[in-house]
Length: 338
Image 1 (spheres, one colour):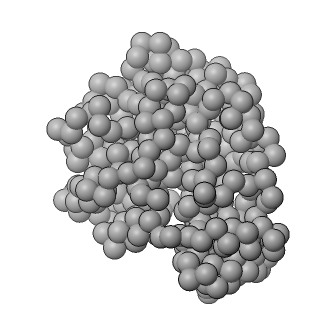
Image 2: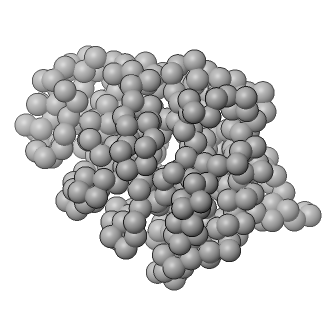
């Protein structure tokens, strides 16, 4: 496999490279990037053959969008695919905190959730200004899930269905965007969203991995039936499938529980017996499902970015997948790389 391998998504007419550039790190996620460093990361990805770039207003209060837009300025738009997200409106506010969760040294804006029709139109206009563009290839309704909103999620989800999605449909009709859908962290929410809308393309983070294959029950068959493409993020489950079951390993943005460490250890042992890094198997397994258009991976530095490419290009013997299946570590109905 190569990062520049591509898949054509018939419903949207978009062609995605196998690896996508995840824009959260250049929004100063868990550490500070310089503008020059962010541009260099984008340039490195381009040289590696990556042509799909994903970002969001929520990645550093617009900082990721701003940096990505400037780094890609002057590129032929027909050669690349850009996605961003809606659901947050940023308001410049004097004295606003320059820290937001794990994002540091960010612009002094207040980010407010807004899934209304007008709020989405305003958010898209703001994103266009930050990214120096007059159109997007894909727009995702971001974080209308329980992880983000807790007990208030049903209200935000309804607002997304009656406000945000019709706004995106209007933009699609105007050819401002080619593909519209949802970007969430939960299989059930994604399934409900696709059932209720005419989504083209969605982004699911951390739910279809070597450790988790529940989307094979309902979500992935439904996507296949409807022609909905799926970008996958979080294929390392926020850490443990990259590091292995080491001390301090992370799973779903928290310390990995014992049962996860045990399963990750069993998978890692089989990978090791074939001389394959666990992270290589994690990347390639996720891309094997035909519904998946791209694997979006973030990197904090040049070394990580180069490593992701190396892992994706690693030769994985077919017997590794057979052994994982025989051990009951991946589902029988999970596609594996040819």
